[in-house]
Image (cartoon, rainbow, N blue to C red; front, top):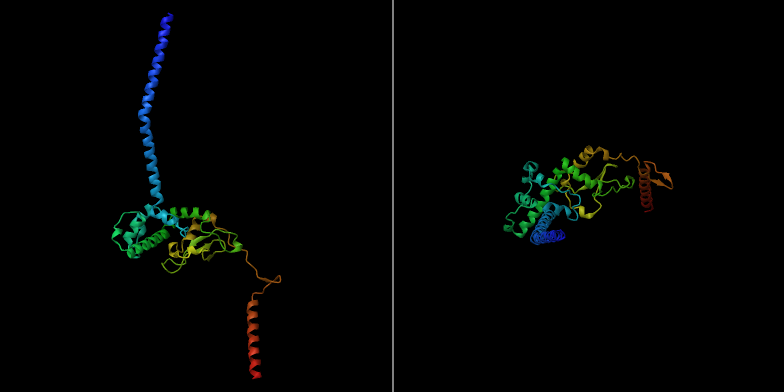
Length: 265
């Protein structure tokens, strides 16, 4: 009986050794395969991420000086209805649109001057598309994020106490004026504080955007500025006609001085 029990114990030990060897063999075969798959998946993910980073629209919006722009979705640009009428405003319209959408085109057939014109047309076309996009619900949402993070800056009026501002165009037509900043508190417009924004055409934002923005998000519209700066001299408030009276007195004194000088002659 004892001999039979020992034999059974040795048989179980041999069985466990065979199972362990089979498991090690399995790992030696399939581990490299799984590692290769993980590496391939990681490379594929990195490639996709890299493609997104170097697409034209994210690249353009990331340039220094283009902080006012939000990224327009490709699906919006691809819808020809959203681009109605823009083809007559852009010389290299088809090529510029292909460039914006990262579509391969025969740009190698263009001269250096034509290539430069194409790149300028792509920026202009994107700006005009951008002006339409930011008054859609999706565009307003994207500009909301930038507004809350004060990407557009704050009002230079001291009494507005760092009120966030929005970009605005004083005209919807190209090449008429550069972009300005609208303050919803004092309800005035100002030049951008940084010179790198002076080159941006106001038509890329338009006259409607900031007002539609606050109609869409009325809870963000601050109360109009009631406080007003009061000029004082030695602590006394100036009369509203003080400058007028001062000018009249100055002109009178000059006339009397000229009259006295003529009499001496």
